[in-house]
Every structure is written in structure tokens, then in C-alpha cells.
Length: 390
Length: 90
Image (tube, rainbow over all chains, first blue to last red):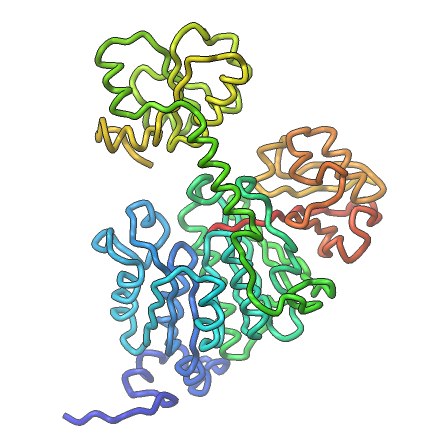
């Protein structure tokens, strides 16, 4: 048997057969498919948005896919991150994604970047790609990706999700606005909950990630009308799609005045470091009790009140026996029902909200109050593994 | 002027629903009207001085109000005001 060597710009017979449904589209054709094969696309994040994007870009025959991620696959990812599977729980997401891509289309070259994208490495990594697909899950990386793409002149295919809603656009193409033209500054930390805190419908990143992929493919092929200059809003609950006009802001420090000439400290810009320090200080400033100590108090039959400050839908998932549910927002109204003479232990999911509750109780004159360190999650780890974690 | 406001779910829980009717001659008046009716929503729409935030974009029909006079942008009967906050999930 002989094999015919193909240059990177040519398609093998196997590829011609594989991509036949593309090749018979006049808008793609042989030339378009060769463009896809020559293309280098960087996916920042192989999570909810990056999973469908990587799968469809690979299936479409994009020649080189760069993947940036440093996370490992967790069971809670699988509700939406469809490139990973039960078999790859605990593995590096890059390895999990590479295995799946190689199975889907062995013609695709995967370049794995196992690192967080930072101000130090972003320009170097992004420079060698044609297009960036932003599938990150935090503001600091979104501003970093935006500024790096503007500086390098690389299109930034943007998608973002929360609960049932998504946003998509294409930033930083020639004359098009950038992310900073839409949102000049990030919200203060804690104002906008993450998907881990607020939840997300699993299929939503599928919708938004495939829209990003569609835009990336159109850019490579040079066909259709790009989302550049428009913002697509997706409301899955009402199933409404709406496009709004995005204008290039002449005062934008990234793409307007170009005063951002190099990458900055994005954690500082987004206030993340200060917020983390404040949270740590708040948690360490309140008296704590460990789950093991709490279990011992319960076993001894100690007389104390256990208050759960989570939300009712979290209470339905898991609870510690003997606890009373008082969601944090309603604590102030329930103060008259609490006895400051008794010992009170407060818990939530991880210990953050309950630390705030302890401070609130202390400010109201309660002196014998403890925060359950690590919340019900650590209770499940250290005391009662039958308590579901979420 | 009667204007319809569209709130994303992240903000709709602070009001009666995701679609609200409001009155005013400018975007700022419409926002002030809504802020008075829903005190918990108010600090998510505008800062303490009553100015828009850099991370919440207002669209009057299809246009970003920052290019049409910000909160001073005039509104007319039947206009739609869409509120687009920054979200970062992925």
C-alpha cells in the first residue's frame, strides 16, 4: 500500500471524503476547506464554552487548535463540558480534550498550553494564532484576552454565559469595537456571581459556544456577516435572540486611544486580589469550629443552636441534622427569634456566607457564635460522606 | 413617555419581572422611576450619584446610550430600554 504525501495546504483523499458536506457548499468548497486546514485557532479555556467550540472546530477541519487550560476534569463539569467524560474525571482537561479531538478528527493538530493565561505569557501564546475564542470564566482573563487581542490585532470571538442567558460578539477585528468598548470596567468582585455560585443551564454554553464557533469559521472562510460590531443577546428561558449595535468607542483605552500599549495587572484592575484578601480576613476574623469539633458537640448532646444560612434550594440538596434554615438575607429579620445566651454555630456551603452571618450576629450583640470552617462541604469530607456535595 | 424595560434574569429577580413598564422623558428619568419602585434593583442600575456604571450598558432600542447622550438621552413613547450587565461565565 502506498500513501500519498499531502502538503499542509492540500487535502488527502481521506480528508476530501470526510469533509464532503463542506466541499459541496459553494461558500466553503475546496479552497475554503484548505483555509480551515491552514487556520490556527486558540481556545482560552476548555470548559463550558470551549468544549463545543473545540469539538466543532475540530470536526470542521481547523488544522491547528491551541488549548489553554490548567484545570482537571471534575464530575460537576460534565453537566455542560461535553468534550470531557466520566472516564476522564480527575485527568487534566488538556489531555481529556486532546483524546476526544484526536478521536473525532486525527487530522487536527492540538497544541496544549497547560498554564493560566497571564500578562506574562498571553502575547507570546496568542501571537502564533489567527483567531482567539474566549471561553474563560472570569473578568480578569476576559480583559486580558481583549487587550492582548487588540495589541496583536487578532480577532477575539467572545461568548459569556450566566444561568439562562448568554452574550456573543466578535471583538478586535479591523475597525470593530472591543470588549472595553462594551464594558469599560469590570464590576466589583462579588457583585456578579460566577456559574459555580449562580448556576448555569448545561445546554446554554452549548448554544453560545457553537455561536462562537460559527463566527470563528466564518472569519476563517471570509464569508457571511460577522458579529463584529454587534452584540448578540441570548435568552434561553424565553428563547429570544436579540442583536444590538456595538460602536467603537473613540475614548476606549484599548482600541480607541491605544493608551494600553502593554498588558497590565488584571487581578489588580478587577480588584480580585483585594477581594480575596478581604474575604480571607473576614473569615479568619470570626471564631471558627471545625466539622469534627461540631460532630463531637452533637455526639455529646451539647445544648446549642445550629443555623444554616444557605438558600432553600441548597437546603433541599443537603443539610446537617439539627440545623435550622435562615437564609443570610433574612437573618436580620430573624434575630428576635435567636437567643444570645445560647451557643450558636453558623454554617453555609463553604464558610464564606456564614462568616458574614457571624459578623452580623456579633454586631447585634451575640457573643457566643462560631463559624463552621469549610461549611457543609467540609462536613461531608471530614464527618459524614453520605452528605451530598454540590 | 411610556417605555418598556428589559432586564436580564440576574436583575429581574430584584424586580417584579424581566419586563417592566416605566415613564420618563429621558433614560435617566426612566431609570430613576424604576429605581424608586424597586429599591433593591436601584444600586445595580446606577451609582450613588445616579450615574451609569461602566459595567452595565443601556441600550435604547438598538443603540448604546453612551453615544446618544447617556442618561440625558430623550425617550419617546414605545421605546425599549434593554439593560446589559457584564457577565463572565464560561
